[in-house]
Image (cartoon, rainbow, N blue to C red; front, side, top):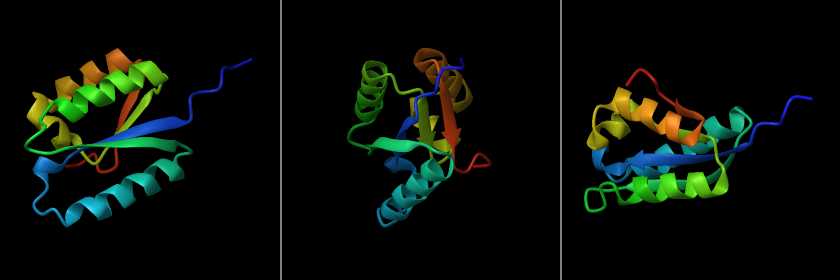
Length: 108
């Protein structure tokens, strides 16, 4: 029997990369729609702003490990840029959660 994958996902948004605060509600809605379309239940959305850089990310990683969530959804790779090289950060995060990081817009 094939084990059922965990249907839960969390989201991470680096709000400091947004051009306006008004973008955040639409971005949250887009993430929910993306998650639902792929069969995930969005467990939590973590939002990093310029005052909390790394705090929300650290909380997300801790919660993902604790709750055994294997999928993190982000708007795009740009939302990892404040943490280091985005491509390396994606690979590092996937390794540590034993899962996948999915981007709703992988081209940006």
